[in-house]
Image (cartoon, rainbow, N blue to C red; front, side, top):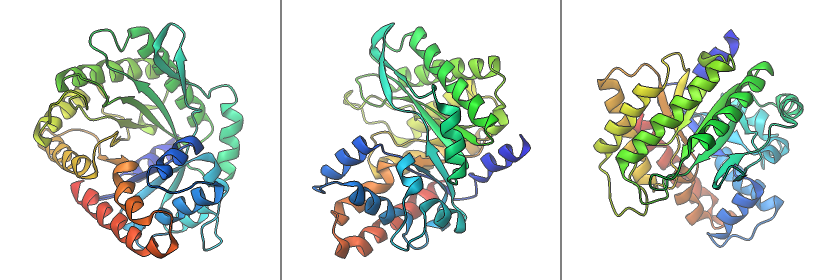
Length: 329
């Protein structure tokens, strides 16, 4: 287990974080289409290469979460992505859940699938170069109705089963119980749901004897819902987010990474800066960094538009955003 702890901790190098590039075929297709880019397997490969092969990304990235198809793809340099990243000191990881489905006990909530053949898939991913993995659960807030305790518990149980299998396979698990930003809820409500979600998760992890020192938590920030009409200041977000984590996350956890979850690049960067600053002032026990997808990619994709001649400018925008997010941690 010791090497898993060391691997998990190595994600948290000063100023470095994770690029989440694990969009499924469906999500990648929709994302590219929103920038007017027609999609195919080759265009998805170019989309990954745009970011992975940008010169100097290793200054800011300690890890990249890949989608399973990307583990087998090569960059324009002819190198397989996992080996090319590892050669630059960037740990390759992989998303291992198979997406969400409605929960029969509460049809307006979602549970994550993918446990059935997980151990077989993990053995394959490890051979292909992955050293860490990610599993996402989705927690929706709706007034006092959602989330329900039964859905929180079922998602926590699946996250814990996943974490146990991943550690047994000799890989590091990232656990992502995402409390969704979409909704009309208040920031205080988001804070209390984060506390309830993480409290449930860590109690189930303990029941299943998961080594907490070898897991990374990927969490949402405490934000007023995107449809609430309320714009939180970074200081408000920092105070409620850090308070929620201090109340619910054991200090043995290897570290915490934040998702950007629908925030604009600037909002995600400013909130992260305020959170890391506040966490230091209250002596939070874990290292903190980012694990962003759209907040790192958006500006580049709007420049790239799938055209080879736009690659240098798109990469420059990506590196500029990485530098800002790196400065925030």
